[in-house]
Image (tube, rainbow, N blue to C red; front, top):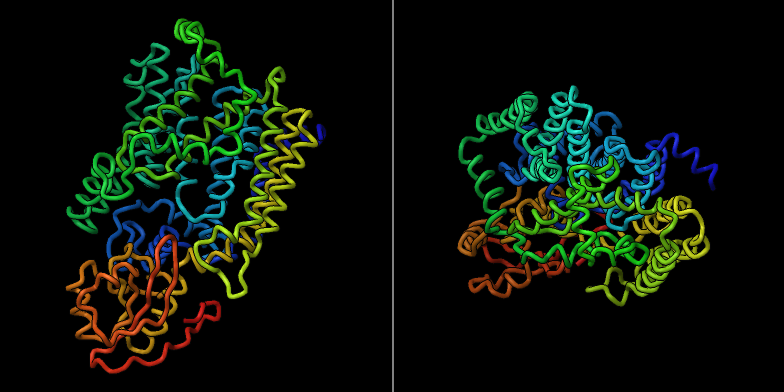
Length: 563
């Protein structure tokens, strides 16, 4: 094992790339796109292919929620590899995850951590259940986290004592990366690295350095990148679009959101699940010192004369904690927003694991028990399903995933007293034993309760027969990608009533809205019902002449469940 470790530490990025491939190979086309973000982003990408590449479109109208950079990456991957959508969406997730691992290696180098700390942090991330899952989920958050991490790495070099001559160049690079992060998902891409840098400099008594003339070129780069897109959006969509972006999507979501409002302590509850299995690390860490006043007083007293390693630890802790506080202050909260905080924690974990004096066998045994518990839970997964996923019953892939979890647990028990580097490498390798069956068998079996594709294919089938496809009071753009074009979306019943009265309609509607529809026509016929992501949905048809609806037509896609 030591010989293998020595080889991997020479080429850490190649090693992490191989492990990423081990988790993702053969999975890109295994399942349908899920509700709600995956199908919406897919439709935005389809709009990009139709020429809407500066301002994204969703269901035929401007989409202010997300900037375009991630979708440009998908287009580049499509062009380079020839892998068209939807498979390219999952390739984009894997490549974005690999960029995160590269950024972690760069940050470890910028902080001058021990030579294998970056590799260990990358292995820890690959063995983190949340991160491993995101490698198989089509979102821009991994790319967002990669750019934020790389920006912080560049800021570390810019403000490293003794490297003042390179400050202007690396500050400009850091602000460029922060600008690209902003064009990936929004202003947090700029706020995270700026906040960390300012707080660290203030901690070290060096805050004034951030406001010197060396920062002006970087400020110019930042403004040039961001204002270029703002100007393009203004020319293409006009001032109303920018008002929506800056007021509704940024200001209101930060202060009084219309979507995903949660209490301030939301992330304190959500975080432990995102950091499994490493939430068990305190079992081996000397956390008792945190309750000693002398520890904090000594830390504060030495803040201006700290060693390079102490500086690195301070930067990482400030990054993790300040980001968590910032997220908690925002009105809108979603679990995935925590992702950028995992990178500094992974590096801190890597530093801790190098301390052989700590009782790491406690962590490995506790983690093994966790994996055994997960194996038992997944093997009984059918009991927890909210709706049947197949006529035969059961949960395909559950036992294979449970076996993978059990393999992880067994491996940790067998190696628990070995070198922590070797145990970490073994766990990263064994993670593929549960990730692969989860991605190739278990996840596809959940399409029937997680994907709107069955409903969309019925809409498309009826649309080909002359019906107008309509979605009532459902997230914008949920069905457009699989339907293959724009569909009518009605937010209120009066608009829906008018459509039903004047056109032949195929309608998708939530069951609870169907039940509240006071003026629902008697001749309207339900042809399909699907439980999806917490709610039941109906597909129904009606004719404007109020004649009896025909029997449900057979969708062309053989994998669409029949009514």
